[in-house]
Length: 229
Picture: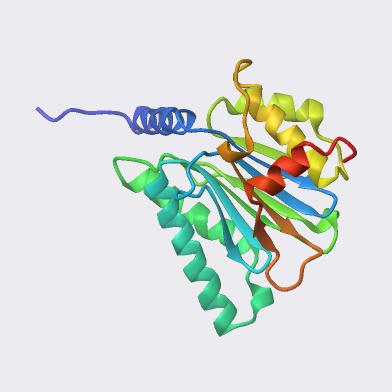
């Protein structure tokens, strides 16, 4: 006898499955600062990146299953390269990438037995803080236009609550990094995150051409120790 599961129950089971998988991962924080957008991941691995450049002014951050979000990242890079080459580099936007990812994730969630266990942020730095774009995408293809800060993975609610208390508009890079790290540490009162356990990158609006850059451990230590910032 065939086993029947209602569509509503099937969607709920898939959503619960994806949420549990994402919650098992380590957290990532994305927040605006005075000169751009900061990405901070609780990630001691030097080989498996959670934060990556997609295009000139656009970066990608993810939590969940590495092989799944890496497939999405590569698809986004291909999309950006083809559109930038075929049309104009200015036609490649975070909004366009977010729409692409939303369609892909939505299709996978509804049409396959196993949803992707991923959550993403696609961010584009603008000429001013007001023109920055940050889009958060969940496993079912839902898109949210975020402002200020985003926390994903692990105990995301606890991290977001800590960020809410610490975030201020126009923060310096060092102040934003300290706020991000302290918020990540809020998941566990006994946890102290050192520079070597962090993956940190920025989209710096003051740079030319490619605005994405990774921060080495030495620079992270300097910024965390800069009480003047």
